Structure formats: structure tokens, C-alpha cells
Length: 203
Image 1 (cartoon, rainbow, N blue to C red):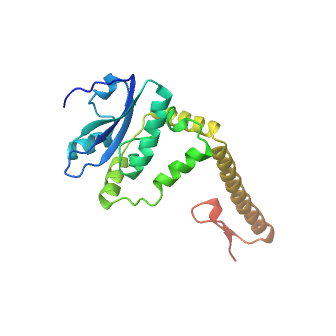
Image 2: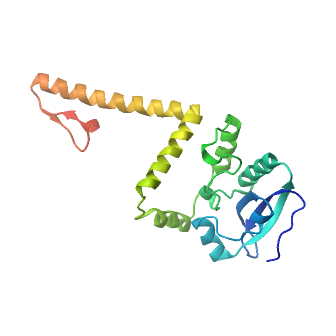
């Protein structure tokens, strides 16, 4: 593949499959060095490239890095290259990645891009194989926890949802507790199957 030469400082590039009918599967942003870096971005990217080949094209050039990030995000949505819809982008592009605070309009665009997509049986099987027997190190678990905490701190909607889940869970636990107390008071045994939420009074 011929080296890529940029006219501007930053570029947004699109990687497509090398097939009779090419399919865009990855959008990236970077300098000329990055655009010429052919290394795999992640396991999903490597799998698609090994099966179908890869052709890279420059979609956009600019000297404004913020504009390049914005264009990257726009193309991830437009070309549907996110991993959840069969592509190889692990996030939606743009500055900051998944933990970056998102406006309601941004979240709606992401939602619209992901609606109506049905994974093929092959795609589902690949996801299943990738997740089986995968052991995370303690350091990896800590990083995931820190990333999730940051996302929740930066997103009011996530914070509200977390509070709701906690409230719902507490309500169920208190209901089970009160049911058990009522059983003890009446002299009837309280039967529980599997979890405290499943407690019921039996005669």
C-alpha cells in the first residue's frame, strides 16, 4: 500500500474491507504517521482485516484537531463502524472516548445509530466466543471500575439511573424482610427459593 501524504496536520481516515463491495469497518483520526500505521487497533479490527483485507482512504483533512475529532465521531455514526453494529471502533470516536460527558443531542445520535440493527448468527457466535473463559486481572478490574465511576460522575442521567436501581433493590429487600417478619409473627414459616427477593409465606 502506497504511503499516505497529508496536506493538513490532521486527518480522519476510513478502513474498508478489500472486497468486490467494500464495507467500512473502522474510522480513525491522526497525523500523517498515524495514517500510515498499519498495525491492528484491536482484536475485532484484526479479525475483520485478516478475513476480508483492508483498504485505507482519507476522508477529511484539517489543521484543527477539534474539528478532526468531531468529523471522526460523525463518520463512526454515519458509516456504522462501532463494534456494536459490526464494525471495529470500540467507542464512538471524538475527544474523550466513552467517559466524556455527552450532550442529550450526542446521546440521541448514538441511540439512533444503534437502533434497528440485528446481529447475524455469526456475529453473535463471535461475541460469545470472545467473552467465554476470559479472566480479568485485578489491575484490569480496577481500571474498569475507575472508568465506570468516571462515566457515572460525568453523566447526570447515569447517576440518576444508578440511584433508581439502588432504590428499587432496597425496596425489594425491605419487602422480603417485612414478609419474613410477618411470617414469624404469625407463626408460619417463610419459604425462600434462591434469593431473599423470592421469599414467600407458606402455610
